[in-house]
Length: 398
Image 1 (cartoon, one colour):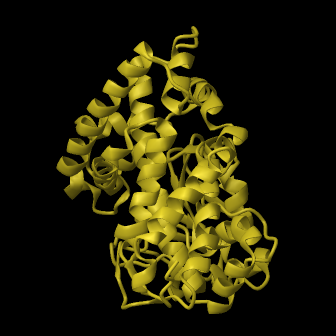
Image 2 (tube, rainbow, N blue to C red):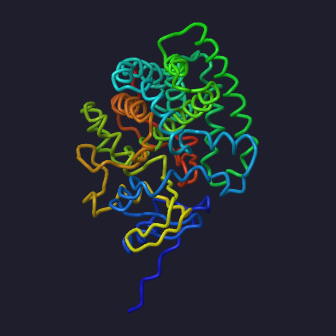
Image 3 (cartoon, helix red, strand yellow):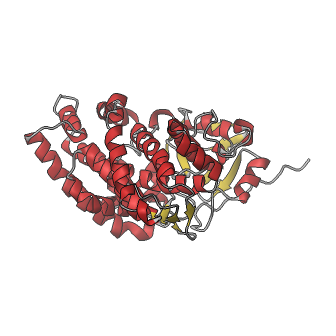
């Protein structure tokens, strides 16, 4: 008997769509496919197992190197982010940062998030149309990060520009984006270093002060480590929320019944977040690197081998999800939009909370909303989302 050939998925092609029928067909044939960067895991069970397998480490540390970037500010900064660190350094820095993300503290900010969302919608509701990214998703996500970190909210547009430029770190053409990325690292690091200096002198009740205090309690969170962490938090928190909001609207507006239900049942907001991240995540793959030779369900992965767990493919796997269609009332296995295992996203509660606040409010304030044209979108691989997404709806006079 001849073995079925393993499909090749060209993840390095900016035009490749990781949610495409080609990926679904490959998933039907087997649990993995080959890619220019190792292997892609396509099914839920194998992805969930691999992301927690301690024979693998976070694979993002080699991302610049894989794209021909071996030195310079970006390459050095990337290797020091929590996303790339492993072992004792990762454990120590993550432990020191956890108090800043306690559930009670994040939930206490939900009324502030709701007031901000209402304020932004008030600015366009009577028109019956909005460019959703520029008028809601970006200011909402950037101003929330400013509030979380205790930054001057008047600076949100500059913070957003830096975050947008740093978002190119995850693009499949990252090698061409290095000057833009490095300028953003320099600008955002300098700005946040001034904030840290201020909090050392004048502590406040904010995340930066919490982290400054941790660095001064003998726990060895250095000023440099704090700067690296804050730059990453500021950009990742803003960028992923902005992108996921656009993707959530794209997903929900394609299902008017779900949009109406969300308006009627705001209590479904948290579940709606999980569903849209399952079927249309901004983080389209999660990377792991083998730290030893691994035989995994019949696939030999040599030490140093890279494996990508494709978030949408795993999240819509009918073997795990049954009918994979969007259903904001359904109870599902957990998606991988925030990763899994020891590298599970530290800021997941912030993202879950601000999205769960915004989506039901938008559904209520923008009844019968529909896309007003195709919009402009990033490639559907790496980290994806909308650049522009015009929407029209029945005007809300307030």
